[in-house]
Length: 114
Image (cartoon, rainbow, N blue to C red; front, top):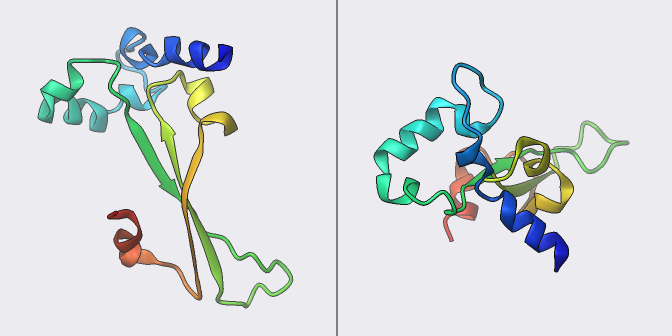
């Protein structure tokens, strides 16, 4: 309970700690600003949760590097939090695990669409 209350108070950090001329958080970037201009009703409330989605593949069979098998975790993290919090284990959520004989490449949309 205490941890969630501490997290809640940090969810507007991206709005209250804006910087000019320095990129230290995704909220300082042009993509974030473009999104705000394109969706002003969403941007008007700093409590609206912004999520970052990342994926990276690896070969689960270290001994057989020539194996074509791969494992692709898809991770979502809230970007509202301060930079020292948003990329830490408690705030990184595995949403799906794509297993297969090769890199999903462009077909990854099939997994992310639902």
